[in-house]
Length: 113
Length: 112
Image (cartoon, each protein chain N blue to C red):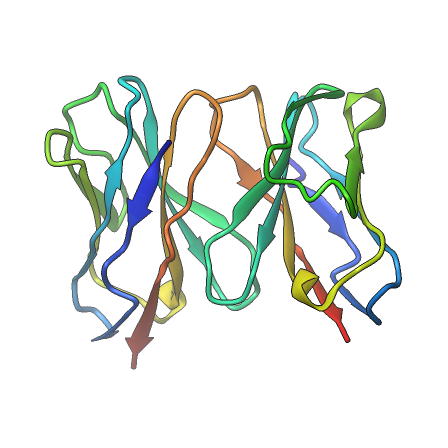
């Protein structure tokens, strides 16, 4: 069974530029999550989708971050414009349904210069 | 709201030794799950073990086992016969109705 796929693996941009990350969850998983993991900390949930609807985006900085999950499968997370403090690893995870075990992708390391 | 405390920022043991990582948490929910994830330098977050809070029996997965003390809200991870590949960050994470909440992590190094 294929795991959660993410791309790109690495991204370096300058502040005020925009960037987008892509996630393909495990087939059949209804719930998709985006986490931000700053160096030395545990992951923090940014947004949770159930199929193509948003369940929780309370910690998403909505002035610069946006996410969508069209057709309830793939998802993209966008940052526009990026700030230095956005440098982090962005993890995507999926689960069969909410409250089920979450499986994580390899992550995207973003560096903002 | 759920909170998680991992009181050991770093640990180091010799290969083949047994090591225990501690975790305490707080939650107002009565029905929840507890997880340990490991994150090696590759950054991939890998599930180690899962415990249902309603089960009294401690979960075991090969060399990994937990000591779950529900009343004390304690959830420690024991790694037996440690291997070099166990070197990683380990995160304790309770999950309530919706959200998985991660601790700050324990950096475990297995030395040859």
